[in-house]
Length: 330
Image (cartoon, rainbow, N blue to C red; front, side, top):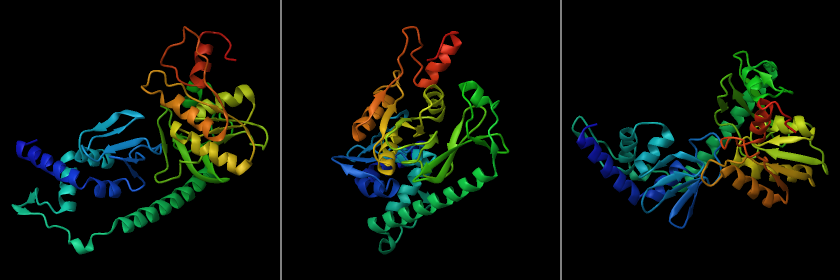
């Protein structure tokens, strides 16, 4: 990268910081200002945990506490990260948005957008919300079509074999991807697709927050376990035969717990949390404790034997480790 381009990117970063709150309201419209920081969901990650993303309004530094690789020192690198583009491309977008004219095409400054046509923050929020709702509806319709046309999941699927779990009522795409259904208010709203290597993705734009994958039948007044991933949930269900709701990620535990309490009333709820011992801040344990406190639930974590590797984090890890030792995974 030429030195002149680096200097232009630095100039744009300085100008962007002066307009930080306006830009962040456009890039992360569901965020809020908390002191000198813009706090929002990380839209570049599938889990999109609320409040997991922080951007300094005074320095431009940004960080995702749930992802040690997601951090940067200015707003140019932030836009580059959010859009998955090069920093020079992000800088050019900001340059044009602010009408700076720092980058030029064919020796002429880029035209500044007419100030009169610049949408207000309220209009931007309304537009983003309308697009979000449309994406949710589109994903839910696609989820229903995929689910209805799919066959029952094969017990010999590589992912299920690796995790040592049964497919229960999961389904499978013609391309061999496991389909985990996500429900909200009794409606199928999304699916998680898992390939043979364990790579996971949700349908683009589909609901995840507040949605969950069920195992067994939730009954008012009965015990219900709430956990993170589906493999963990399947392990808990196999050992307890009690219903389980899989929230899919730590940042969704509280939302799912609250939604289930609202839907079913009194539940003997147990938050079965991950124990991310090797991760700074232990986000799994932190989120599980917060969810349990929010709804008055019990909380449960794996009981690690002294010889168990520190890399193990959840109940499925523990069950598989016991099997590898030739012992019982009770």
